[in-house]
Length: 179
Image (cartoon, rainbow, N blue to C red; front, side, top):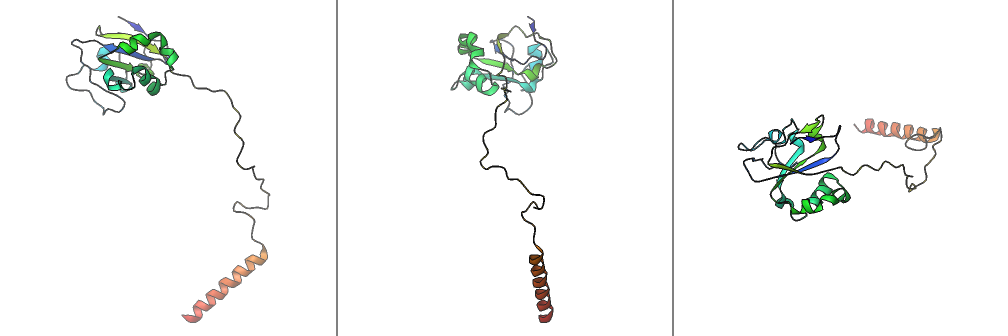
């Protein structure tokens, strides 16, 4: 079976793994790199040079407390409405699933999954809302700086500078007198 991909495919593809000779190592984004020695590489299973770092393989029971649809919604930002047509199929899955993220199939036009893999669905993640919005009001009104002000505040006036210099000379004189 050949599975066609859209150019620059943004969708997350979900496959179920049936019982059989195909063994895939369980791998999530939290797993250390590397495959189990007796497992088929993900590239062989999907029949294409996918980036295995962006393919998750796990047992549905591992996400059972939340459910596969909730996992896909939270981990991959897929809107629940996008999965609505496949609700029964996703909820009925047991065993292992492959979740193929868009980065795994970059530059590919098709997958040739082995017969043990069943395509469940492809789901587009939510698009970023790029609508311009007004900024909330500032907590304090902006302060206008005058040209004669420094970053730290008002500059020192000449009288204050004179007193600082005189005090420094007096302190220096006292130190030399007592040494």
